[in-house]
Length: 241
Image (cartoon, rainbow, N blue to C red; front, top):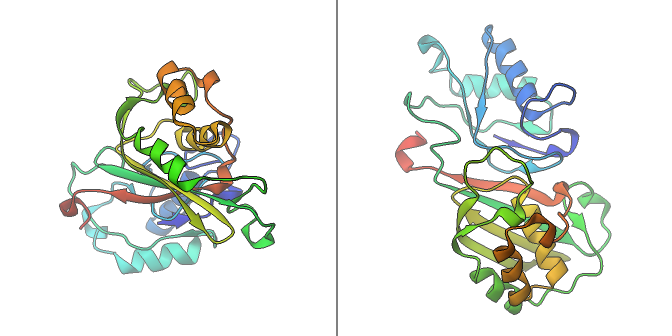
């Protein structure tokens, strides 16, 4: 599935705010005629979008072959900012979150005022990116590190160790895109990474000093959520069919 997160307070169901999870559970429960609880491949913050997102739920065996029919019914029921591409059965031990091996996020920044990008990209007019310098710094962050400095404080994670597989800044039309892939991400991590690159101007020594501090107060300001996209989730091939 995919969604535009502008109107939602993230993926996770909340008591007093509309979430993607709540909308999906309502749609599935209505169509299938039974209470359905879904588990997503991760959490997204308020306003964050997803180009690719997986969820799983339990369903009676006789309904598990609905496939294309369920896709059609869901897309007819769901609002226009949420779309389902596929529905397929998986083994009982497959978990949309814990079975994922790699996640990729993109963050988009545009530098020319564009009403068609409102809520979909971060408008930051005065930003000069030295792509060679910033990407050299990005390479220093590859591998396993403690990313506590880029995480929200007082989270319930058992460890703040993450393994970064790739990280790159690239030029796009009227701006820049930051792309990062890892085995896992901490809460607010990508937005804090982008903000720290901007605040340090991609300086390697300053970025590494922030990383080594393990203190959120040493990192930069988190950029707005509406420029962030969960763009890809990787599983072992046998888990996706």
